[in-house]
Picture 1 (cartoon, rainbow, N blue to C red):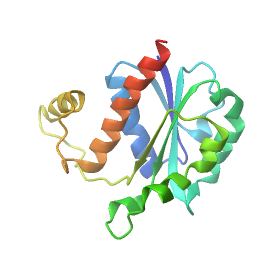
Picture 2: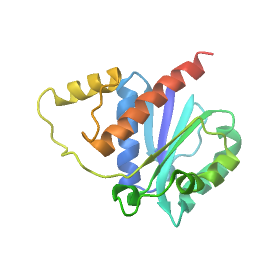
Picture 3: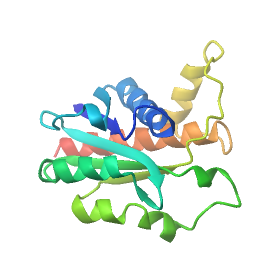
Length: 175
């Protein structure tokens, strides 16, 4: 299974989420290409596409919308999933309702069918260096569904969504 994971921008929160999605899917056996949208010339040759960006003004970034518009015909023939990074989700005061959050991607869903959507704060809560065996324990807890509430919250949400998405992709592609 070949998957393109792409994101608007070249660095920042969306790139971090995309990198986590790509690492999880690679770890679960998928062949993954990770690239900023500006570096993607075509989506041909991929079984599925996962695209995402940071919300800007209550919508996907213009670069991300241009990617969807440019590839709309091809994306409608592929398995397509999206993620949106909303920094205000990181604070209780800025947390939005589900209905408001869904409006951030309504224009994308209006152009291309999505099989899954993830919404993340993009927080960087976990230090990048880990203790020996920590990554293996985390992967095992992820695969067994034993994630503890609050533990590596933002990253585990991305990684749990990525693992569920991978399973969905495998099921859809085996039909």
